[in-house]
Length: 306
Image 1 (tube, rainbow, N blue to C red):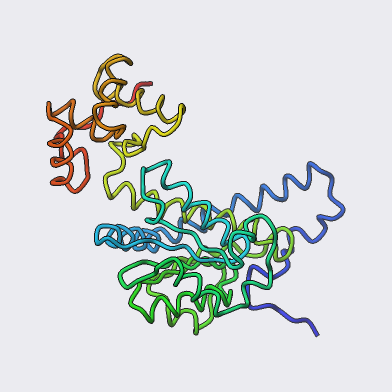
Image 2: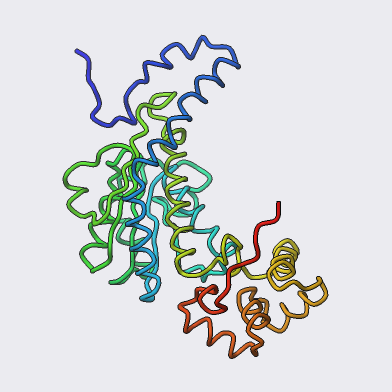
């Protein structure tokens, strides 16, 4: 008797059934062919992803936070996406947080049993200070991770919004506690059940879109320029100065001086220069514009140079 797992991510892939006999180049070609299907799976979920972006923006504007919750690869991807927000967009580390079953040790060493300890989901969210008005995004490639389901159940019970990113249809008991569902169906993996591959790739694409989209909506870019970063190291200081040189049409010494007067905030520096304002007044103008710099300075960024 043959058992067919209802989870697509756990099924065998007929296209790679003989991969154990393949040459290195054939292995590369087989994996690449499967990877090529991922963007289309994500694209089919474009409207669902947009709805999560809208919810995340509303959450942030109301003073709420975004929590990613997952186990294994899914949890690591959530932690990765959350950890990139402060250096990229100058956010408070509390604004976007990633929680993984098993805690920090699970980031580098497998803690497979951790995903089955239901109560730890509530404990982890409680320690992180989850409250009504926050947004919890569960990440579960198979759609069935107990830790994620329990986290979403707890979040719903205290008045937080919930969303789920999964690559296989979740069971009814999970769907019952999900407000928003993103379901890029990536199908069986190259190696059966190895969801760090196609499912992991699709998940990373979706998480990138959620936080990037929400940050753009909050006004953390000017056109496609990263203007809400903080010059906390040499690389970011150089990027900050180059942005000011381009946007404000000044030389590097003037850009450096302007950045210093703004307290190291690129967006404030741009508003100061283009509107001829003090730091305090530039910050007030940005506040009135909802943080969107184009609405504050009433002009587009300079055209892209090719």
